[in-house]
Length: 260
Image 1 (cartoon, one colour):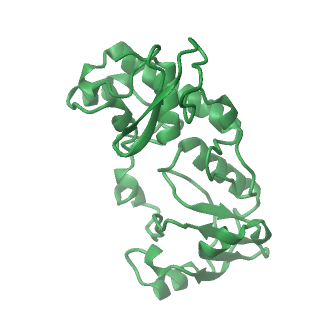
Image 2 (cartoon, rainbow, N blue to C red):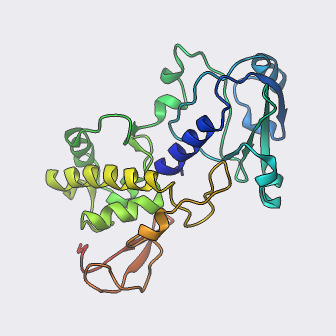
Image 3 (cartoon, rainbow, N blue to C red):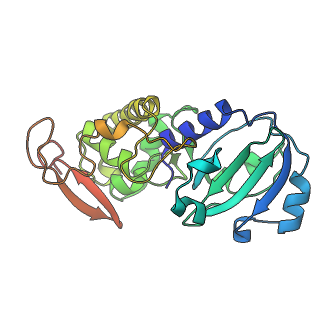
């Protein structure tokens, strides 16, 4: 599941690497299953000679690299597609889990098409109203931890940041969405935006395998308060951090600060 700070970090580095305004000279496809809605030949034929004018984001999976020498052996084995650019650069996409996909859609209406139209509000680039979120949550009865991971409502919160957001707001991850007060929802929105902005400044979180297109790790993992800190003392009250599996995902919280 894409975490917004990591995805935005990738976008910014790709822009600064100089691939914008470059022409696509060659396309190598190593996993044809990633190409959706048209066949592989059409995909390549339509892209050849086209210029990259802009890089936007809204959800993303897989890894992008701009220097082939930076890839590890494991990443080389996961290469799914390579764009060869006019300045001699390569834009390399690696996707070990094969969750990603490539589509060619018209610039005029792609935001009304799948998968873009099914992705929720972006927490950093679009206005997020607590009123809207509170109304949505009142109609549901699921743990807030699960709700935060639903990318069709608000996008960019993955497993790491969900635990961090709930700790800061002192909300137990198993609290039902319809039991949240309006004030709590406001706190969730504020904390989410604050945490994601700080994580972006630090280049994302490399608690596991995230690395940016220059093969560099993020630094926000040094700021994590509860995620992956099971049986370590809470930074606020010194109570030992606990963890539960919620909908198949590891969930971390302080039983004292986040009472159910």
